[in-house]
Length: 154
Length: 269
Image (cartoon, rainbow over all chains, first blue to last red; front, side, top):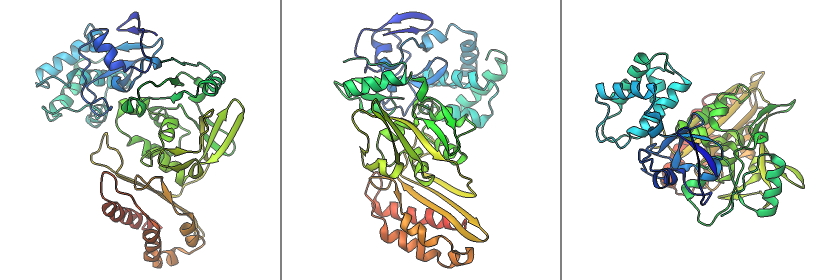
């Protein structure tokens, strides 16, 4: 199976039914992709495939032939990431950090579709990502700030 | 295991017949099950299954259409959109499909509940031809579908209809990422002060979605005033007929909630 990981062509020889989550972590050392539930319920393993948000635990390798997979390892090289990172930092939107890679990827996916989201739209966009530390408000505010200060990037 | 990744519908049907592999559309249910030693038929790249079309009689939703695509499509009926918008969260709606929601064979499937009240038909294809089956015949029981080993779910055919009033309620443990504990959809249309059509269905409370067409028939043709007077009689008829199973919540709780949802719906008349 051939696909693109963070812009580079890669191939995977293995079970087509394997989870993208496990392959990313074990074979490609993308440790930003966290395993929280393996049921699509927590969003910690969220990645973008062809610019659309998916939970990588619920994606089988056989389904992503020729697709472009983006994880935080690739996304952190972008200006969009810089805007999100700054906003998350300034608003103390990160505590233990486990959910944050998924939160950032979900935020990026939301802003790609909707560069000027309302607060409700941000909550909806992040509704599949669980955080047990922050109580969410700081994260929502951070995405709001990133959208303002990073205006034009998405 | 083998990787079956057809690009066309013809190829997919041929592989389905030859290999009896498990159709994989969005993966959101299959990957939770995480079956071992399974060969999937990856139909997520089959463009023919990813269209929403319209003909004289039906809105035709391809089995590979995702919930996100449906929400962005003008042809998809509002009632369906309301139910689909409450499914899980964006990452799941981006992957989950109408065919998968049906094929998983659960009475909790939120899009299937709407298919019941809208009298949808399921179009099944194999290399030998097509079958079109009413959704309530297709759903025989828990994980028990009228789907042959060589068939794929191709389309959901929703009869074009003008809906005057409808109710949709999903009772779950939280707003996002909730699996329905009880779900309800109802449609009621009146003409010249009389009930012209009524349909009510309950999801997630038994092995299949429940709809009682016999009870609905007793309401047809009644004037609005008559129907209001008979409301408690209708509710009792439903309660006498409904045999609910215990799930994540007790059967008693489910029944009490069903009664309340039905009562609210009948207030619409």
